[in-house]
Length: 298
Ligand code: BG6
Image 1 (cartoon, rainbow, N blue to C red):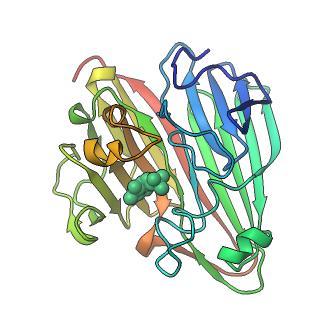
Image 2 (cartoon, helix red, strand yellow):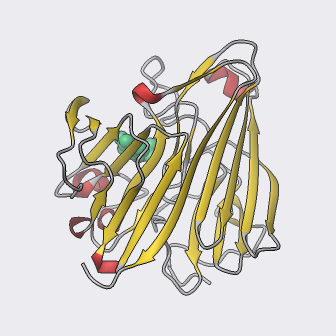
Image 3 (cartoon, rainbow, N blue to C red):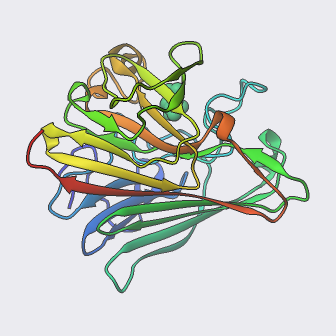
């Protein structure tokens, strides 16, 4: 059971704040998923610490994004340039998804599945028919798949992501490996395109980058927590790395000035130039697999 104050234990099929929440306890880990947004809020290996960061100040309110866990980005990444009133990162993370599965299977894995189809409200901001399915399995690893099917009669282009927030000991002491020599759009430098040197990412200020054209596995190396978090992916060509640092975090009511140091986002996405165009009846599958490995020292 969780002893993290940001993730109090949630019995299966209850609520947190205003939101319906599923809690499953598998043989190797426990999993909490909110139906709003098909949002994985907690994944905690047995006997280990939480892997996903959840802000102690997060809202759990209808129609409001949750700050932490794994928000589902769909069908656009970031702001919509043609519509400033459209919700940042799309409607996927604040929509009510239908739970179609929630159980511990014969292997002891916690498995859940959620579905979302277009409706009057989604068609107002994005005029296409689609069928989305989010499948999650919490076991010795966390595996999340987002499938998008085009059920329209015309092609559509979309952005998507599994916007995973991870707990870290201290943002200034971690490194992210896997994106060496990769180009990125620097969202804190007027979207300038830059190239990562042949070295790991380290943090000494606000960092908000869309690494594009990369299918690489990333590793968060965290000597303070004596662990490596390995984030493998498929069907994804972009990886977004984000930490707001003190200034921006202080202006975010659901994060606050104290919590940014213990989090980092490494997001499995298709954003910007890696947006996906799907023909009618075609399906795209975006997957991430997260594993935790112990390390003895830095
Ligand atoms: C990241 C973006 O994916 O999400 C950042 O690159 C953004 O620019 C961050 O600030 C958080 O977004 P939001 O909408 O959850 O506050």
